[in-house]
Image 1 (tube, rainbow, N blue to C red):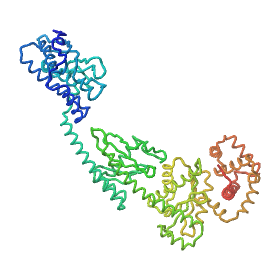
Image 2: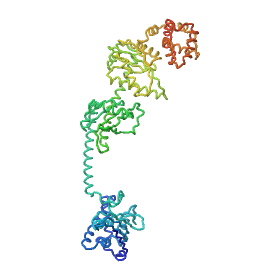
Image 3: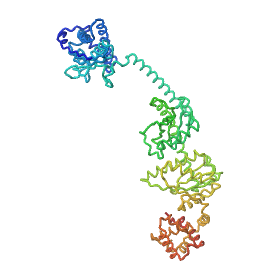
Image 4: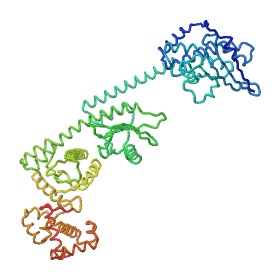
Length: 620
């Protein structure tokens, strides 16, 4: 059953042109509106006035229900009461009501227009023109009245408003559930807001929590600062931080190796590292220049935990990470955790900056000392004495290592920065491994004097891997001296390392011990004799500057180095078998020798290796 009500006589019968009857004057209501906006904010004024109107509508609705009139008649009488309040001078109201078959109320939709709204007048007087409807009290009154009459939440919403520049103030009323998601600036939203007192209580509680957190954070920062000022290590600082916040913490380098930790076992650390390497491989930054500071902190989400990461940056260089391991939780956001980690990262950066300054100072001092050892400027006794000041003990045996690096540089500054990084990383590497070493540059070669070097291959394998990881794809050629027993042998060791380095043609690493008689021949200082012998035995291949002849010289070297194996030589030179056979035949014709004769091949190979060292003949 559906009943339609339309009554336009209300406006004509009850409209009062000049003498509205209000319990308060319109101006008083305007002052109230102004004070509400002043004390609780204009953004909350709508809620206050809507609820004010709602309570008035509920009160009038209860009075109307005391009569024996039907709901349809009460819908007509309600607007009469509203006009009598003085809030409006008239109303145009149309309403459709539906009932179930048993006569119970089903739903309602009403629409209409308010005339001469006092709220339009007062709002524009005090606040000027609005961008949204402002008749909050009227909407609240209609909502409260209709909801009371039909005993069901019926919400009125103003659609157009004269205060917002519209011609009239039009409205719609319908059940609360029918509004759906359209709650912005409507009665459902306004009625559902918390009272200001409740919001103030919540705000106070939030401020109290924030005050406690800020106090805790300040105390955290103060204690970490004290640890740094008192010269504590990174491990000490992390332990203090872990106790203060009660969470597992780690500080890691760029290789994700844990430098310091608190509240977490070694097994758990290894498991977390494996998770990161498997799920987030880009976490590992191999080149510090690739790091973008703006990327900032991050959260890495795993099945059983979340990992919060904040970078440790010193002088615009990424040196490591501070991380916190947090159990899975429903709520999102780690703002407080970030703040704790940022303070820890700052403390770690100060410690690392101090250590970096010490490293660089001591590293340069050791580099200068290495140069003194290899220059023969001071007596062995004086050098030993100087070494004691920087912790260098020459009572141990050692080896000298000479390194060449193949890398293209855009400028001299670029090369200088690379050398600085290489020195710094090398010093840090040997210090972390607990090995005594001197590092520096001499004659455009990177030199390392490594003590206790009986497992030199293992040491260098790990070292080269470390350098590749941090400095990118850099090809290193390494020459290694034999064992030296005292400081007087350092220059000899340097010469041996350089000789071995010159012969790193077919492989990137060569020890002087592997040279055998070649090393003895070169150290005999018979340079002139070697050159005369080369001219005699190699003939035109040695003295000629012809590029084709150099190709034959290079082919001969690889052929002899491979023991006459054509297949391996062809692979080394990227030649076809037929092309290689042609070259070998031509070489034999020039030299008038049988290259498959062991005595001939060994003699020629020995001479060629000596030439490579002494005459700077390059074999690619």
